[in-house]
Length: 327
Ligand code: SAM
Image (cartoon, rainbow, N blue to C red; front, side, top):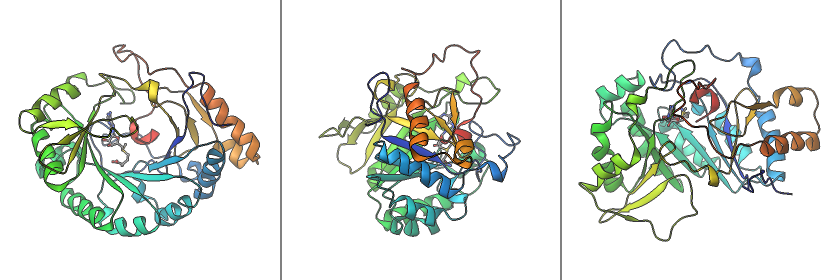
């Protein structure tokens, strides 16, 4: 029996966070002096993650994406990917900030990774430093080149746009997509700062971004439309690139959500925006059987909310930041 939630959505996509550690301190994600790292023994071992994946695949999960924290910081990640690529999934991706990608791209591709998403919020070294707290932009750009050379099926650049931070770079990102044939996706900034108010003044609506791009480039619909995903996709007339808009805030896509998430400390989350979690680490270490594990996963899917909460409620605070959930 496939995993179908109580709103008839088929759940076939698992996001797997393998670490809460990161080599960047993006101010909107994990500001310096943020939360302490999760103790090592509380992080799921690769064997434990693979066991969850095996059971999830038996329940009809077909697609997985490895994330973090920064997944390339965890020791043994290439070997883990090669084991994951034999777990019966049809599609395996990874999301990275690209800093370590230069050396990892080819080994990851050879290990069976098919897609890579690279998060990059600025193409300007000073701006990059301001947003991420790091001066390693050059390494990210070298990482993108290595990924292109390694022959991944799909390379996507994910850019969170933040008013008065990188909004002046919209056309530079569009130009990157146009000239290099990359897929650049602009993501709306979401309220995820543990214990802090959402910095609403940073929010930039996808529609505004689209207008800026249309002032220079001509966007046309992607034909044939790919299976509807979270991004609204456009091709760039006269160039090879594509542009996507992920309007998580201005236009939610909960009706099409097919995801569940496994955090690095072994919690199953059925919605990025809900704080409800089911613990898998305890059962995994307590000798749970595969059918019992399957039942826990089913239970989590059954309680998946119909849609995300209303963010205009400014009193709402999420207990985890994105790096702790696995963005
Ligand atoms: N380290 C990896 C990376 O950089 O891609 C994976 C983890 S990171 C948390 C995943 C993505 O979440 C990044 O693209 C980051 O920009 C995004 N992110 C973090 N906080 C966010 C927020 N408040 N709103 C929107 N995206 C956010």
